Image (cartoon, rainbow, N blue to C red; front, side):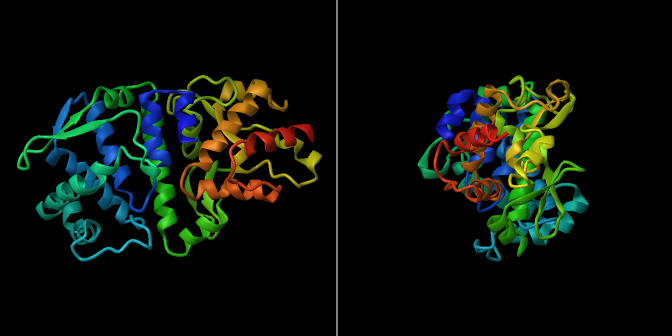
Length: 333
C-alpha cells in the first residue's frame, strides 16, 4: 500500500508523507529532524552545518519531553542516551534558549548515528523514492546538503499543511508512548470529539490532535469531495461526513458515521454544496484509498480503522476491504 499511496501521486511531497506518516516509530527523533529540515529549506538554505541543524532539533525534543515520553515503553534509555541527557539539560537549555554544549554535542552525534541514517527508510527495508538531504564534509565539519526535493516540499503550496501533519503525527505517537494511555490507544484506537473536531484517547478523553491534521496527509492534502488541494490556514475547511450523519437512523445505530473512517477534510464550499447527499462513486474511491493508507501507518489510527472493519466481519488486514465495506454501506442506505 505504501507503493499504491506513492503511485497515486508520485511526488516528493508523497515521499515526505511516507516518511512522516507511515514509518515505524520507537522514538520521535524523525519528527524533530523533519521539523528542522522544513524550517531550514523554507528559509531557502541549500546546505546547513550539522551543528546549526542540531540546535532546533534538540530544542524541539526538549519541549516535547516536558509534555510526553519521546520513546516507547519497550525502549531502554540509559544514563548516556540522548533522551536522558536532554531530560537533565532541559531546564538549563530552556533558560539559555538554546541547547547546552553537552546536549548539542550529543544531538549531533546521535543524529548522525541514528535518525539521519533511517529517515529515508520505511519498514521492510524499502527506501523512499526521493531523498531530502545528504550528510557531507569531514567528521569535524559535517554539513547537511538539502536537496531540491526538500525545497520543493518546504516551499510548496501545501507547506503549512505538511507542517501541521507532522505536528499532529508527533502528538499521536508521543501519546501512544504514554504509560497506560499508550496501551489503551494501541488496543482500543482513538475516539472523536465532534464538537471540537479533535481526536481523543478513549481512556482519558483528552485531546490528542485535530481530526483534519491527523488524516489530511493520508488523502494527499486534497479535498475528499472535489479532489483539489487543501491549504491549511488559507482555505476555509470543513470536516465532511462522507456518509451524511442524517443517514445514521437508516442503519438503526449499527454503523457509526461519527467515526474516523467516515470523516474527511474538505473545502467548506464543497461540503456546503454536498449537504446531505450520499457520496458519489469517486468520493467512495478516494475514501477507500485514504482509509487503506491509514491501515499501513503505525498505531493508533491504524487500530481504530481495523476495529471498525472487524466489527463488520472483515479481517482489517487485507487490501480492498475498505472499498468492499463502503460499497456495502452504500447499498444499505
